Image (tube, rainbow, N blue to C red; front, top):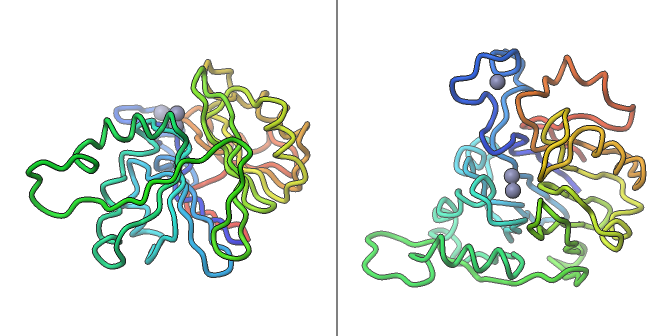
Length: 253
Ligand SMILES: [Zn+2]
Ligand SMILES: [Zn+2]
Ligand SMILES: [Zn+2]
């Protein structure tokens, strides 16, 4: 399995507009973060998690040629506002399967009403094949990739963490219910939310993220959805050996 970190930034992206902090002024490419998204490739299947606000730029940068499916974690702007940019792939290959939970579908159908109830829109529309995912109800993509949706809580919002065989992606969460914790054990790689060093009301802060990793004991863990409080080179010393900050363009095999 190959993971490509397409974006590792919080909702504003890093650098943040009009900010002169040390991270936002950093020349380290690992401190330049587009909105959060990851690409999962396994045995000829390519799956995107979230069409971030920066999806077009990410797809060009990673040279994405085809997507077998898009999985949505939740319907917040930073995770879905690139949805319209799947159109070039639709023009080439037709409709694309999109997976999301029931709550996200309600919001997606409202926000992207022009897709679901087209009126007199000029030009091509995104073409979706909607699928609803349910907590702990695994499904397969291709022959060898089992995807298990697990519910995690982002403030008050139920969000989907996705497990792919021995890899899991869990962003935008403050709390992981016990049965979802059990679904996240025995992982080779966990990518986990960590918005900043300090605690936050709807995301994991660094201490909480490390406590989750300590409990789940994945072989390796990567932190994502990072804001500008976190500077890669300066703050990596805060992490245990098997944990690192993700950065845009990072590939994990
Ligand atoms: Zn987010
Ligand atoms: Zn800043
Ligand atoms: Zn969110």
